[in-house]
Amino acid sequence: MTGSHRKKTITRRRALAVTGGGAAVGGIAIAGYQSAFAGEATTAQTAAASGSASADSSSGTCVLMSSVTEGPYYLDGALVRKDISEGKSGVPLTLRITVQDTTESCAPVAGAAVEIWHCDAWGYYSGYTTANPGGSAPAESEDGSSANDKTYLRGYQIANANGVVKFETIFPGWYTPRTCHIHVKVHTGGEKEDGIYEGGTVNFTGQLFFDDDIAQQIFELEPYSQHSGSYTGLDDDMVYDGGGASSGLLTLEPAQKKDASKGYKGYIRLGIDPDAENTGAGGGEGGGGTPPGDAPSDAPSASASSATSS
Image 1 (tube, rainbow, N blue to C red):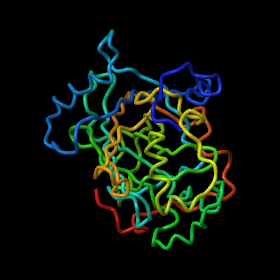
Image 2 (cartoon, rainbow, N blue to C red):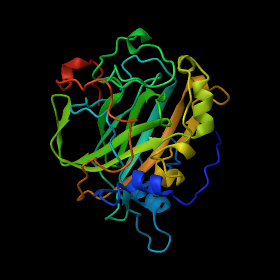
Image 3 (cartoon, rainbow, N blue to C red):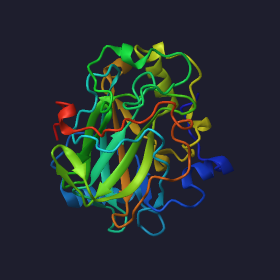
Image 4 (cartoon, rainbow, N blue to C red):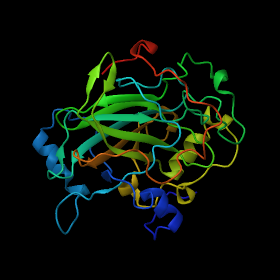
């Protein structure tokens, strides 16, 4: 694996994976968010101005790119909460995601609902715990946590006036044949009710990615090291197209230098068209085929977890 991800010609396989053969509707412009977590009082005007990093150099407008598949492990009814870990073991990860309107000079999209979901340290998704992550991994039920099997590592946050949401979670593991990643949707027009976000429109469906060198370092630690097998690097992933931040590659900073076990902070900026609608059916396989385990028939409820902080 290598930490230098050069831009290169997208292969036909990856082009289909990213665009769904041209069928995707929604749009996205993604750029690494370089500022620190401090400064929550930044004005909306300043936040909008900072969008220049994700703008087209010739036109000064945000670049709108196609969404990718939501994958086979999506569940409706995720809880609105900041901390989605539910006691799952793993290296701490704090995500800061800024949502911007590509049709309004990268202005922040206040009130946008950002939804994320990802696998645990061994490659298992909540609600699909019978799906085999590949290689040799502990049974999901052996992890010793109190996590609800339909809600862990899933959740929403509502963007503030600066278009910013923050999540507390763990560094995802991996599953065959995918690289390490986090799924993301951006919704607008809905509302929070009884701890769940309801209604509205999905404007973007995508995935966030991690530098190979950092992922390799994490996967040498417990509990990730208990999952043996062949890990897929970014260059060989069927969804990541090699475009760096423009393709969802997170900007990562260690919480404590020289000690990966203390966790990471991840930053990214998502530019959407709030008037677009995305079905989540874009190209690219999100999970290596139809999962062996059936999805749970009942959606999670607000009472399923006590971690419903906004």
